[in-house]
Length: 299
Image (cartoon, rainbow, N blue to C red):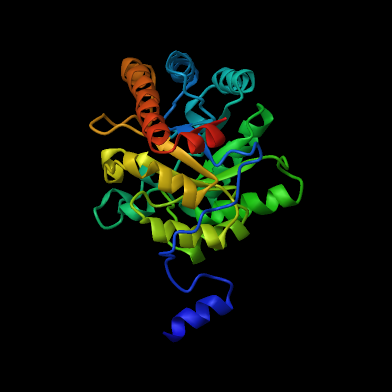
């Protein structure tokens, strides 16, 4: 097809890569995969993750949160940052408020739910940027972004020195990457880490990996509202083809947590611990399938 030649002339793969080449890219520490525990909504949940990870021998490299920086006090953010430094865990907090929690009706409609992660209007864009500024002032160095315009703004502010040069801009699963061109665009706008759609095939992941050099983030188990996929037996090939990749473990059949608070304390603790257990299950499968890869990649 002519389209394949056009794509290749733009430096993009002409199609999904069914040869499934092994990615030679790695994280800065030399690992081909890291473990991310999502929906860690505050310091108490993070402490539960750390405790459970120690008990199960799971190395957790990143925790991420969905309710937003605005739902945490200064002291809570500082505590999470402190825990991250003490245990070498990246703490990634979402921005808010977003369209799904705003006064607009479209985000709450079946066909309009796609806009739920966006920032509506210049005021909400400013609120989202203020979230990041506040977080950075409290020591935060990783944020979740689900709005294309906000990513562009934050990328420029970071390049201009208005935000820390080591700030990680992680694109949320609410702004999912589904093809190489989209992945490349987000990288060009300043993304440091990309959530890809949860159900992409290995050939599609290989094509996206060929288009970008930054880490990919992929749910091995996703929550029901993201399709509820469970890809545990694919972990060895996902790591081989998509490296460097964050392996993310959510929990199916669990209640919604966003926005979180003390009224959900028991659920937050229980689901945090279960996500670590799910990670332990996945890493055990990886070790059984390819012990050398597990040792080489998980340090």
